[in-house]
Image (cartoon, rainbow, N blue to C red; front, side, top):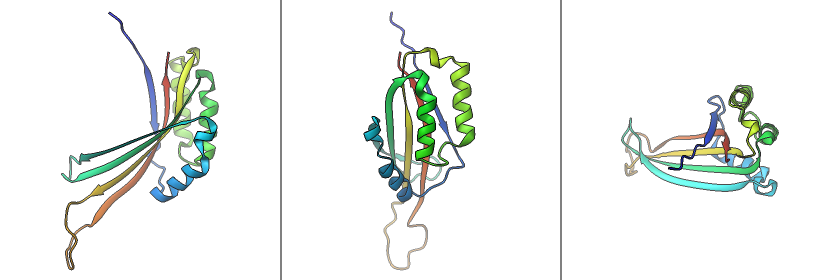
Length: 150
C-alpha cells in the first residue's frame, strides 16, 4: 500500500475588508502571473444552509512552486502587493506553523494567495413595489496558502 501525506496551511484574516471591484483592481495591478504565479479559478453555486438561497462563489488562487525556505519571503512580497490582506496575525501564525512543523526542511512548496468572491442570489423576481432584499451579501476574503509538495 502506498500512503501519501500532504500538508496544507491556509490562514484567513477576518479583519480584512475590501469591495470586490477594489480587490479585482488590486489583483490586476499586482500582475502575479508575470511574477511566476499560476492562476486557478474555481466557480460554484451552493445553497446557503441558513437562508436556503443559492450562493455563487468564485475562488481565484495564485500559486507558485518554490523551495519551502523561500515561502516567508514570498508571503512578505504578497503582503506588500495586497496591503493589510494578511496582517501581523496571519504572518505570525504562518511563521509559527513553519517552525513548529519544520516545513523549511522540505524541498518544494506551493505558496500563494487565494481570493474568495461571494454573491448571494435571491430568486425573487424584481417588480415595482416588491419589498425585501434584491441582492445581498457581497463579500470578499483573502487566504494565505502554503502547500508542501514533497
